[in-house]
Image (cartoon, rainbow, N blue to C red; front, side, top):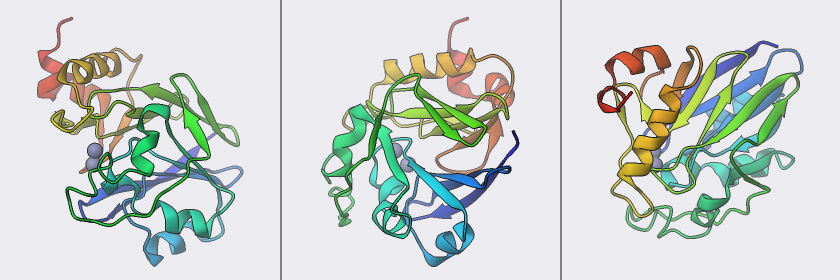
Length: 212
Ligand SMILES: [Zn+2]
Ligand SMILES: [Zn+2]
């Protein structure tokens, strides 16, 4: 199954929103939504939006979810169980600290390590990768070699660990795990540009520092 990835940079902190569409069935997942402008709704158009997948619960990745969910009520809002309280607690999502008002969100499905999200024949596997937040996840499409890493892994760097629920040790363990995945992936992080896992294995200062 082939799948298409499109990116939009949205919201107050310029977070990446990804639109992942299974080419055969038109089934689509939106991965993170820092805002939901008309441009996003237009891009989604008549696609069959099945999921709103959240890499973690920080406000810069979720502010657009209420509007998106209203436009696609059948789409399931999915977040790891350990970050679910961010969806109704502006202290935990950091919205309060940023003085941004957000609407509470009720998740439709709580994710756990190893869960699978199906878009037609396209499959995303949930990897629990704590460190930036307790319930941070990456979504891996092993067939199309796509890895959505949220704020765990960025091009040449990694997510902060100084927010509540963050842990430097957990982040390093998560990066070690990503580094150890078989083969190469295109990496789609939560901010800034895409990269590849091989490039990060060679050049990322956190990954390079990890033991063998
Ligand atoms: Zn974050
Ligand atoms: Zn972020």
